[in-house]
Structure formats: C-alpha cells, structure tokens
Length: 271
Ligand code: SF4
Image (tube, rainbow, N blue to C red; front, side, top):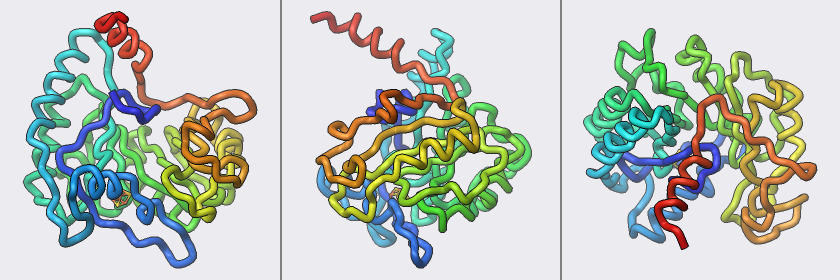
C-alpha cells in the first residue's frame, strides 16, 4: 500500500525525472520535489536531465500479481504511477515507457492513476490507439500547482477530455485557483506542501472550499495542509493533518480499497 491517501498503491517503472520550469511569477512543486529528495537522500541518485534514470525490474511482475489479486477479489485497486518520476519525462528511454504501457494494458483489473506535469506530450508519447480509445481503467491526471499553470488543463483535456476521467492534482498548491474553470473535471486532489520551511509554499485552505463550490464535494479530495497550518510552520503534514472545519474531504472518481486492504493486513498480522 501507499502512504498517499488518494490511492491504494504506488509503483514506478523507473525512478528519476527532470524538473519542469515554472512559468514566470509562479512557484512550482518541482522546486521542492519529494521524489527528487527521496532519490537523492535515500537512493543516492542524481536528479535532472543528465542524471541516469533507474529502471525498476520488479515493477511489471508486482503489478501482474496485484492485477491477479484485483481480478480474484473484484477490488479494482488504484495504482498511482509514477510517484518517483513523470510518465511523460522525455529524458527516459522510450522502451521503458513502452514497458509501462504494456503493463498498464495487461493489468486491466487495476485502476491506473497516470499523473504528469507535461500534458502536451501525450499525443507524441502514448500509443496512437490511445488517442481515440484509451484503456477504460486509466485515470489521467495533470499537475496544476499554481494559477499560472492552469493552462495545462486545456492541453490535458484536449487529449483526455472525451474520456470523462481527466483529473487534477493541485498539490502542492500555491495560491488559489478560484479564478480558473476546469470544464469536464472528473476530480481534483488538493493539498499543501510538506518537507519545506519556505513560507511561500504555505497552503491557503480556502482553495478546498473554492473547489467544492465550483465542482461539487463529490469531486474533491483534500489531502493535507502540509507543513503549514494557517500560515504557520508546524513541522510536517502529520502535525497539520487533513481536517478542514473539523471534517475531511475524501472523494475520488476512481475506487479505493484502503479500508479493505488495511483490514486484510491486520488480519494477516494479528498482534
Ligand atoms: S515532474 Fe514530478 S517527479 Fe518530476 S521533478 Fe517535477 S514534481 Fe518531481
């Protein structure tokens, strides 16, 4: 399972990425990328255009096993990929992306949460058949972490809008998106930055209610305040929590089975 609350599992066909430059005047989550910190500090990897990506050989077999479990139980687990990279990274071996696509197509019982900062590359990098008939279990997400990056929605919706499954990851969000309109949005995950002391990344929790007003509560998942609460640095995302007005916002358009998985794990490892 993953610690990322809006998915059941995360997985990576490779590890590594190149930061996407922010539009002038915006901040970007790439500048405080968790995956980069994890790779550099825990895996001893370099990050960026010249840094070699690391292929994960066990990814395909693990996903195949998970797919069999999903088919046997009828639980369409949601898998976030890539959590330590970007599927549309053009500095990765094209054959590796091919392996990822093969795995997605072979694992039809899983719900695939494909997230990118680079929606303009979908047409170039994905199979031609996906343009008209992408797999029904793919949920394509685009990161919009600042209002000045809202233009990415148009590029994303241009490719995926007809599926009705396109969603936004507004995390870590800086500022508000209340002036933007994302037509056809299936869902939005909103959250603040963790792992930084830079007050410029402090989360404005009014963004959650902005989204509820604009798209309905059933489309909103509030992940976390992040390292700041009401503009004050409180240490980390656990300290700040994910309550807003004494409640959570927990809706995703894709199914999640975290409670069933936690119960199964607990039953398998009784104290
Ligand atoms: S695109 Fe994603 S994985 Fe790549 S550097 Fe930016 S935040 Fe990190």
